[in-house]
Image: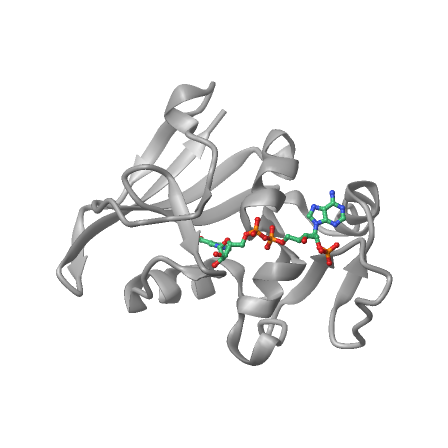
Length: 160
Ligand SMILES: NC(=O)c1ccc[n+]([C@@H]2O[C@H](COP(=O)([O-])OP(=O)(O)OC[C@H]3O[C@@H](n4cnc5c(N)ncnc54)[C@H](OP(=O)(O)O)[C@@H]3O)[C@@H](O)[C@H]2O)c1
């Protein structure tokens, strides 16, 4: 399976249960990668989606161990094992770990590739993705740099 994430220079990913910045080009890229596929998110990230609703056109698997969290518009799993069982029904390439921080940490070792949008800015963040440069991951593809909202960023793929 894959992870997909947007990080700043310090691997920051969010603040106040929102993204650090909304870059239209990055949201388009995220949509292209995940549309028609399976996304796996934590309960807080689901809450951060527009209208707190699952993303359309994708199978949304949400992890929560709160018994009061019951939804009929997405697949709710209570444990990592349950998520892996559901995800096993799909081609691994079609499954994307989509955050937030706790879900990335939980599934990073199960991922073969991480699609990382690297934003060349240091934001004030309160949630982070593991620093892949300090682990056994390497970049095998990178897009040219682009610029939006005065921010330079590029798409990078890390593999183990
Ligand atoms: N930059 C990016 O690409 C990106 C992508 C996604 C999210 N984010 C950001 O990440 C932040 C949210 O991250 P977060 O870590 O605070 O929240 P999160 O990972 O989205 O959700 C945390 C929740 O997931 C459930 N959970 C986590 N581990 C579990 C386990 N082992 N078993 C069962 N349930 C489990 C729990 O739900 P219950 O409390 O219901 O049990 C927990 O409260 C936001 O700022 C968001 O914008 C950034």
